Length: 109
Image (spheres, rainbow, N blue to C red):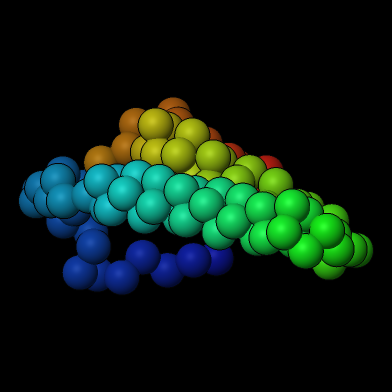
């Protein structure tokens, strides 16, 4: 990345002199799964109440479905990005695939 200075404390990791294999990938998967289950359940319960009990579905319900779709797409793209290295330190990634997790996230945004 041109124009970006590498902090001196990270140089040993980038040069392979030190290793740090800690990762946030497990947390990324857990948070996204909990998030997806929660939004599906809450949106489903809202629709049960609004459509079947009150029989008063409105425009706000349509926007809820749209928001649910985008939230699910974001979580799915995070899970896909995790399989390509999202959540790992940059020095533990394959140099040929270093930009791929970030490309996946840009597609999601």
